[in-house]
Length: 154
Image (cartoon, rainbow, N blue to C red; front, side):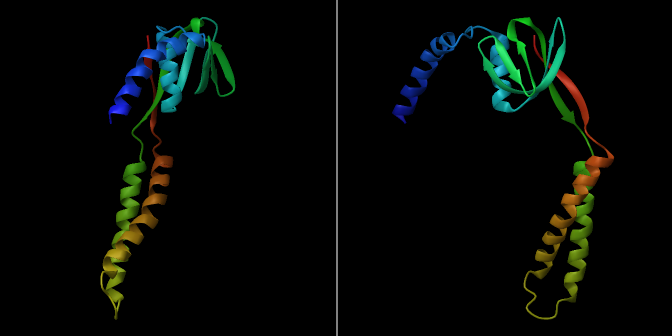
């Protein structure tokens, strides 16, 4: 435990020096946001004076951010936004499909004649899984999630 605390303190003290050695300004808020986007696997949109690009951030090398299929200069970025998906019919479709086939499995478990310990639970769970996954896929297809862009910098 004591070793972990010492290593954490040393890392926090040395991190700004290593960031400066890599050519990234230690106080660059854009670089910090873009590095967080790598670890969090965010889909971002970068707006500059010339154009707007979007995609997943692959790397931040010096003053260049590399996205899937494109790159941009970090000092030229004026706005960074994150893609969020909200709502959708996946949960409702999964519940309807899972409860429907799970209930059918429960009803059909009444036909068991010998060695019927917990067969109703096994039948319900099996039916719920088999019905829930396609139900969620159909629900998301019928009512896809709403896509919004939330500003994360500035």
